[in-house]
Length: 226
Image 1 (cartoon, rainbow, N blue to C red):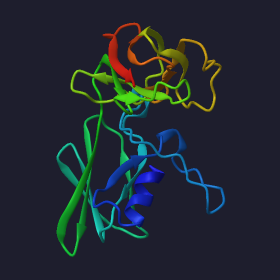
Image 2 (tube, one colour):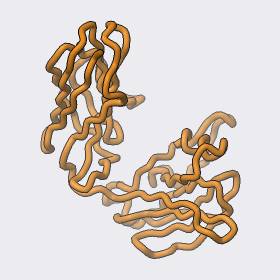
Image 3 (cartoon, rainbow, N blue to C red):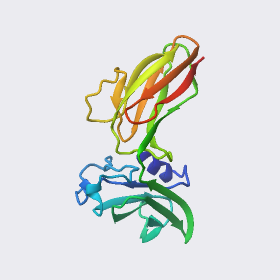
């Protein structure tokens, strides 16, 4: 989220972004230095207890106003100040969109979708190959998705990692700042629906990474050390 804002600020992208703060924090005053950023996520998926409760929604963009659209219905527009517009929106499942305008013309659109039931673990390597020198690292992102390819942003189920090939497993972690998982174990809990697997190799060749979790289809991918 911070990266998207910076990319917009420096003019490196014409895209916009839409983010939310969990409704449990609604109305709280943000406290911190100018270097702090309050807790926002690309998530429109909260427990049923939050239905109808207000959610702070931010749209980042290089325009002059942003329109907020929920399930095809416009909720109005807000001025963009310092590359951000905000609106408090009662939570309901579906599709939340932020449309950025400049001088009356639409320039970008960003979307959040409430995911359906978890279906599959998707594995995507950062790079298809890495150096077989025992030092270079291969990073593989694990994402839990529904049948339509939407990330399960609130899912923290446990995953199990297996490897087959020349590579050596090093770690799996989720980035959760409050976890008891050990990164050198072959299992961990997802955080916001994702995790990262890290491996290395002293030998040239392929390594297959497989990740499993209860209730969903396992995922796999192959990376090559050269």
